Length: 336
Image 1 (spheres, one colour):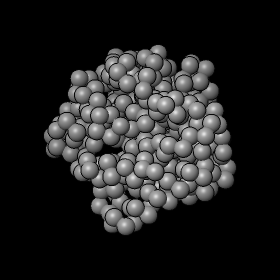
Image 2: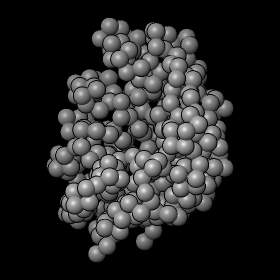
Image 3: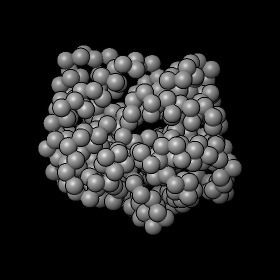
Image 4: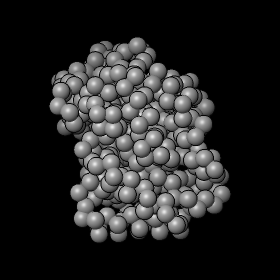
């Protein structure tokens, strides 16, 4: 069976013995073609080449089109992004448009031509045409709270929740609609959707605030993209997410991330039908110690064997991580 077929079968409850491997390859894909993340993130051709190298090198069971995941929407809305020349440096936001106050009059409506959105949509279409019959191809979309944080800054966003809750709720409404519009544009290209929302991770945001200010919007996004024809949806919050695991799993996505800092048992105790992607530490993959890495891999593999709804991923692999290190992880997971 192809990876795409295996994931669909798992979602239908069929027993799949293969341990599916879905590493988080973002800036690292630029290293695979000897380019900087800044260059690849601004070139449709280089991005497609980098994802092709990712597929050919690691044979992952899913592909995600993107490099600097959290910048795209904010840039399209007017934030200034820096593209450092240094080989391994990732683009970063330099100037935020709502750092002084929430002013929705400054906000733009969704426009496929804004920022790098059109570049990514073209790349997604090409990657899906190339690999979409073999593996799920997903477009990366930033969740609404994380968009708000990128527009304002994390301290300003947290303050706004308490000092101007109505304005912040209005901003969340706006960001949600923007997120849905972008996701639907990706779905029209034939790809699936992965929502990235790590700015919500505890202790940055409390479980109560997550349930009140984030989860209702995320549930709406999930419903909207499924209605628009999304074949596979994933929700990603990195970090120690045990305190919000229940709420994350209630959002309705086909796949929910359990990062390496969280308790996988907490997630599996709640969810048995939808898929859970369990991450392996990227720090251990890159730096070891090897004995600890092997122990984590074997533990994760054992959990995958016990729970048919587990797929295995990694935290974000760095630009400088040796290729062989990632291949070793894949080998250990796939061997009988």
